[in-house]
Amino acid sequence: MSMLHVEKMTKQFGGLRAIDALDLTIDKGQILGLIGPNGAGKSTAFNCIAGSFAPTSGQITFEGKRINGYKPWNLCKMGLARTFQIVKPFASKNVLYNVTVASFVTTGSRKIAEDKALAVLESLNFADKKDILAGNLTIADRKRLEIAKALATEPKLLLLDEVMAGLRPNEVDEMVEIFKALRDRGITIFVIEHIMRAIMALSDRVVVIQFGKKIAEGTPQEIANNEAVIKAYLGEDYVAAGN
Image (tube, rainbow, N blue to C red; front, side, top):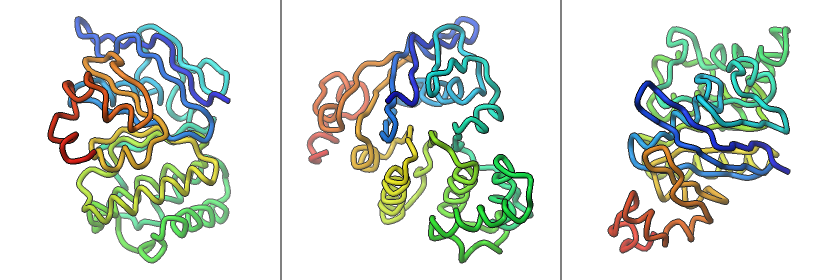
């Protein structure tokens, strides 16, 4: 069953066409990766799907319902949540407080919201840092907090925007396993990432865009061997390194 369907989505900023007639589909329970060079339009695509931008044309359908122009908070209540590249937690509040605020999307009870937040932190092996101020967290832990906040809204579809950027290799491997576990729990995932080792290990399918247009789609292995993708993004060094 299709969880998200994007058809001919275009986003124009004056004379700049950031997204050009993009088509993609994410099936329920799938992890779809989105890659491309810097400036390719990946985050713009996320912003259109998540309601931050209204697409200039085209159609976005979530669980069979057209969502063009829906606001982010409405989409969040419907089960579509996202993370951001630049994390902005409540720095003067602790980790549990930050995640509890997100939990209020699904409940009006402080007790229930806090219990849900704690359960999310435990699922991410992060509960031991619940009392630490968000402003005192490392980059890796701020990324984990960003994921926790999104999960606290109880998403059906989770959009992850470069949440592994800046992490050490062992931290990347840990994140990959966490996302696979989330998928196994029934959460569909759409992920932008520049760390190819991670995106190839994580994704069921990968979409590649350049200058706002889709240039390839396929399994990670098909993408790694696609000449157009190698030329536009991966480079011969990636192929020579054995993917």
